[in-house]
Image (tube, rainbow, N blue to C red):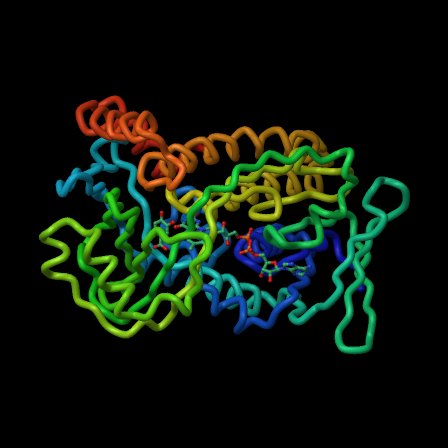
Length: 391
Ligand code: FAD
Ligand code: DHB
């Protein structure tokens, strides 16, 4: 098989890039290790920036997102029993976010790819990028059952998430990695219950962080901070709800509707960036190159900004023969990635209770929160980062 852009990974990054390039007449093949059902079974992000939503519209896969996604003008931070509203719209001169689940967005992208006859190969095993170092033409190999297949291409894009093969194929002496691992995790529960609040509530409580989010008016998504030794089996539904309620402000604790969990998972918290995001004819995008702790809802949105830069660079290359975008991809993408890293790290330090914190750290966190709630400038800074900095 021959294509122009060979994409490893059929998560949101790979599918969005494939769909956008297809609409510009650029041919792609997506190789995904798992089945479609498996990819759609992962419950992850819920909050989208408008820049991301605009890309979905450009990719002609936004109908359901525009009909069913909820526009949120703000959210609450609860601390010391009080709720403080972050008025995203008022603080940013009209910007908001869309609450629409990653599962639904990925489903829309798959449907978009099907509609245009895009090639997405599922259950592709042993996907391997070859000859991307500029000597010879790049190609990918993969295995389906016993048969080994080959895809020749001009460029390879690694959209294969944090545990993918792309990043680790780049020579070790080229790649510089930056990482911080936090000594806590998030236990997430999805339940078919009405959300406790119309808007999200981020909670800093002495028992630990909690987050009340939602997917729709009948589907709630809640998280509580847990330890790294915790496993899902340690957390019965009863224990989860009791812990969540213990951390909520009084009014929310009194009105929350509980019910059986329909999904329960634990995510560790990590900040990670690999530089550069291009090595010759191999490009990295999304979680393949960087990870944030989920607190600031930046992960999927940072992936979307990579796709924005890479998509435009590929179009300039194929349409105008202009290599500037491809040459500057890593630098441009990383400039925004690092701002997302800074914000996620800051939100994480602000809202969690860290087991290794000393008295000084705790007083500083309290001061940071007091300052935030008393300063329009500080609130504005939070808001402009949360709705997403411009691409
Ligand atoms: P992935 O979604 O990881 O997709 C990579 C794909 O590549 C996968 O389908 C995988 O199966 C495939 N793959 C891997 N290895 C190979 C291989 N060797 N060969 C072929 N295919 C391979 N982000 C936000 O912006 N907002 C939020 O509110 C938010 N909340 C989150 C909450 C949680 C609990 C978690 C865990 C994450 C959250 N995120 C959030 C982060 C967001 O989910 C990720 O940033 C996003 O999934 C990145 O998309 P991706 O396509 O780059 O990578
Ligand atoms: C969700 C996840 C986040 O990380 C976040 O900051 C907000 C919402 C969610 O899954 O709904």
